[in-house]
Length: 191
Length: 191
DNA sequence: AATTTCGGCAAACACTTGTTTACTGAATGG
DNA sequence: CCATTCAGTAAACAAGTGTTTGCCGAAATT
Image (cartoon, rainbow over all chains, first blue to last red; front, side, top):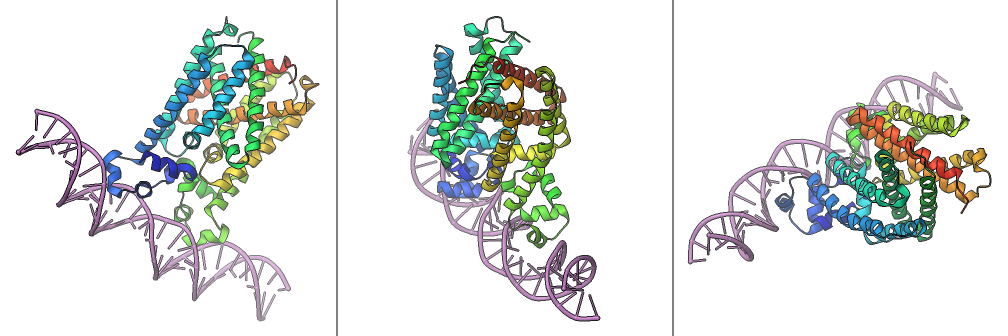
């Protein structure tokens, strides 16, 4: 049923999805839906969890790896690129519903994204470049990274479905931007 | 009719909007809709144009102003804050439909945002800080700024509807992030 | 003054929708 | 082996849907 929903959400958004539509796609009767979810919103938050589970392991795999700034950036962008390719449907779902019309789903995504930022913040604190940084500054940097990741992922997704060469360009731009932020980080004097 | 649509899109997205719904809200008969638009998608792109007209003047008012980096940042964030407050419905519409389920609307928004980035890029080229920068680097910086603006606006909107004190925090974070980028800019060695 | 366009209406068409109800067979657990 | 939970069904409900059609009055053009 989740798969059916995800498949339909490829070119639709949750608010316009119908119970009957989902069950039809899943090859079930309409009533069967209510055996599993009270709402379509509930199906939505289930999909959020499914989508972010894979994201979590991705983030960790980037942060765990040590190394110079350059390698870290290259590796981060690579991982994002791969992730978008391998989980297109989930990424599209998240991008679409992050500001979508269903409040509960929006909140679920936002909460999880906040947890990401916190996790990134902790990892940043361990890097030598961050010596002397206040918690506030670390937080704002973490948010900047997370937002940038989300933007990049969305852009990559849109590009890869239209014109794969544009995806390369977007990845390259993302690397440059991360490099710029990295430079800013090295010369940061605190707020 | 546009107003009616915009009003309904406060807690719904375009894909789930109905012709009858719009005409009912506007106090007209269903058939009247087709006198003005062939599609709901057409109404959507009309709203896109309406929404981005005001954004355009906003951007210019920031870029025109000269001054030190600090004042420019403060001014930019102030203008965004004001804009979000004054055009909540339009901003929400853009945030929601940017990755929404209606292709034509998505494309309209993306195209216009691209034009923004180009405009910002030209303005950046004129600033003394950018001496010696390649077109590519200027472009990536412009995109970074535009993406950051969009993220900030979305976050502000979400916050201001829930808890106005959180909006202050978001604005402060945005200022810090812009400052960090600004530092990176000053020490950039080219790509 | 005549004609055409414009913006509006009511009614009708054939569907699709969400949700509930009563019912059924299979798996599961005591 | 019996009872219960689980996951499914068909049928029915009232209500809402997009779109077309033919019609009408006012405004604008000629």
